[in-house]
Length: 213
Image (cartoon, rainbow, N blue to C red; front, side, top):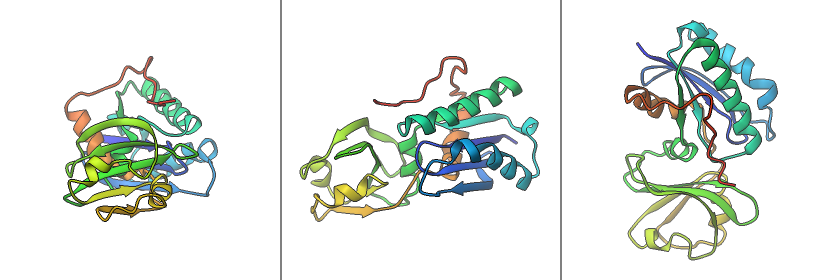
């Protein structure tokens, strides 16, 4: 049975999960309103493995948030994941951060996750109900007409720490906002296992997360 360690450090959450195939075994997520990844990440990894009664040698792969997100947060997560992959001889899997965030929604409508990129800019992408990306990830400067083409088709769910500022300028009746949502490792589990089955692995030496800017 495939066991995967998932690490999510793209934003303010420091989040770790371990799974058996696509079933969550244990997780640890902390949000102190500031970045604590450097201090907490290795502790959290040990905690979730202990909770699942596993050791690092039991792992079949390491999954990391592939970005976009905080440069520092992504670097810490990727460096940790690469170190584990090198030491254990295990493959590295990258799950796009916005796909992870979109996976918090169980709905039959379009999903647009948004990560705050400061000022009126966000990192966003558009996903269908099956979490397939139908508009690529990009850094986007918001205005009141942003996503008008999607909103004209029906209900659209916006979520993430970038959704709050968009809610202040977007008053379209088809727009629904979920605020204070952050990427979590538990939402990587299904996508990480799917990539493992398809042997969608990254080059451990050369992989870099998608910073966008």
